[in-house]
Length: 455
Image (cartoon, rainbow, N blue to C red; front, top):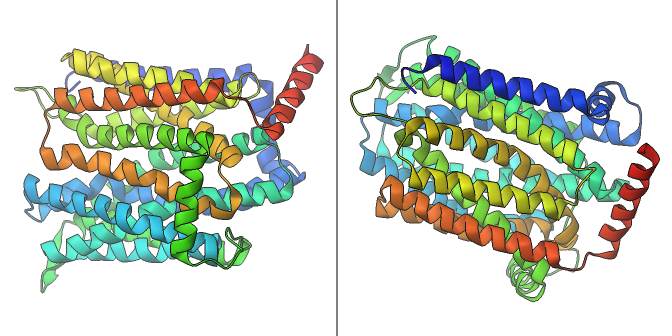
């Protein structure tokens, strides 16, 4: 990879051309994107309301993500203590996130979207200090805010979408546009963050406090978080989950009971936990997988951009397939291809083979989020949506902590993720074979009618 610049540029070009080709081949996608900006129908107006808030939240996350390791290294934190910091983040997400989700259902998803901005702001501020204890507090705040980002925003979207009477396909299209925009934001964030980091060198002010260098992307992230907080507080309405007056603990128990009693909710959670745990483990391990002994350091920034291009491609492939296949069928394909990608990394030590497997997996990531957003929107009960979404994240966080704390080799790590994704394949296959809800059957009939009309 380090010496194969033409291969890297070629893969970027392939991803972009493929994404453009998918959009160009599907007139409905072109119409949908054009309608997002100019349409006056209820769906277009709703998407224009939701997407700026969500994309500002994601941009804030993407801006600082690529620079965490580099900043810790700049502060002289070794690999072992680096691992402790990330364990603290995932541990906080596992322990606190579930309770926070229940509170969001009770007191309002909009309020907790704003709370995400506040907590993440605090997380970014702590990066000005090079003390391990302060950085540890920051990681805990980061773990809590991550739980909010990946539960509250989706819960708000699904609730408002159902209140507006949008179909499952329309909800899926909104998710697809959201994560298409997120991929674009990630590509932009990498470049903006790099520019911010190079404005001034990392400089100590005094008392262990620093500015400049890799702290600057975190400051830029905080500017975006303020804008996000202002937008959500002035534009979004409030919606709630539980309305029966139960305590947080009571609602948590009710949500756990629903997961264990309803096989579809359980299988949906198994798919989410399995895929996302494998995804996060991949995030921590792709860097060493692409490094070769005796070779220059690969251009990780450009490689990250390549990943995001293929993630963007995945969102457009979903938009193309969403009106042609049932979402359960798409989920099964995504899980199967993802498992094959991780198995390839386990079996091969060739860096180029691994790189291609990672690009393919990133396309699956782009497909996954609109797929699972649509699945959860149909399956998870509205009154405890945020609570269940965060319960889904509990086994995810535990699974991610295992290789972090046990210091697994690359081969062992990807053997683990392949096994986890095999569980996701089995869950997706079982879910696909189950009878559909009346609502889902009605939407399938509508899709068939639309296809017949197109013919």
